[in-house]
Length: 454
Image 1 (cartoon, helix red, strand yellow):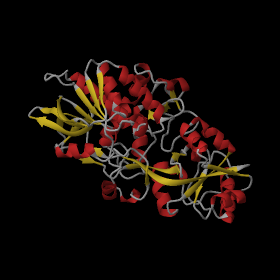
Image 2 (tube, helix red, strand yellow):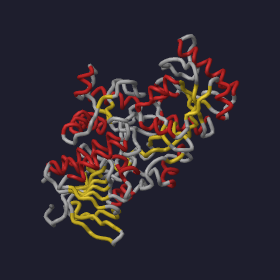
Image 3 (cartoon, rainbow, N blue to C red):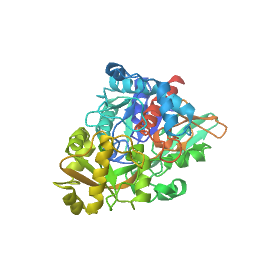
Image 4 (cartoon, rainbow, N blue to C red):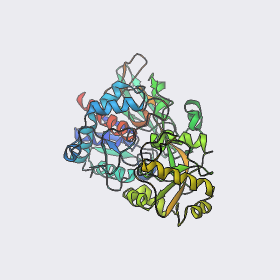
């Protein structure tokens, strides 16, 4: 407890912020987790992720013979963002990434392994680590289970963080509302881990208008609460136009088809059966491409080989179970079944087969074709989605919120979508794991800093 009898750390948000709760508790601090959603274990953005955590230089990489380093990871981040990402934060998160995944495995007991069956766009090394099923829900359930059993961690659910109160020496209390009323809880440190503002249509239209018409696929609690509290206390902001989109939300079930389909050789077409871009640029930026060039409706075309390869993803299995993966014996039958122009799809399939064999180059710029599609084909109707925003409160190397002069606001921390990320501007700089690494990594760093100050 702090000097006033309150918790040493209040964590607002029971997603990636649980990493801060577990780390702080392991270092001897008392932690209170405040969460709005009673169903947070299945309904927040961490649960909706594909559980990909980059770790540059991890022991799993060494065992697999992968030569990687934090410096290489930073190079990939800066290349993908065209040098727009904050290099200091990228260096900080890349530098702690291997330590983070090893801590999650060794001290939290998370069953992590290295993803080696395909490469994510923009990562020059195989560095994403995940749990069995590659499901954010499974990963979060593990964090929740460990946090609930820790004697130094208490949960207040449902409860909303209304405000953070600051005195001359920094944070002194939080104001929290519950169904029973409002109370002031003394504390010296608060981690804002309530995600970004993707559920706030007005803020999205203001800062990222190109994706404002996409389907929102995330927690309804992501309304910018941390942004509002932090800026009211003088916190600076950065990269508010950054976001993670996804071009492969299967409809009508709203399950995630997954971009592994594309990386294994699938392609997207519009209702005319035509491709409209290089799908391998990345699933985040391709969401806007579907909005712009396909009127917000596209189909992923795949074959049995890809279907089998993607069965390691729980999200894809959920998509398959929903009936969204439509099969047919011929290309024309498939087109007629799902409402695509048959002549266009037949021509596009033949073109992609020639490109996959290396007979011709793709005029749209795609160079990666694992194999040509053969045999029975399937189509998945997809809509572009907004998953979460990637900009927020400016933070330093300890996850402390800073003001416009880069001076930390004592006791105030931010992680995940509440903080600025490492994706640069817009959607084009997003790399797989750019959501979870700032969520878990900044939480881990914040807990270390709070504990060091005790």
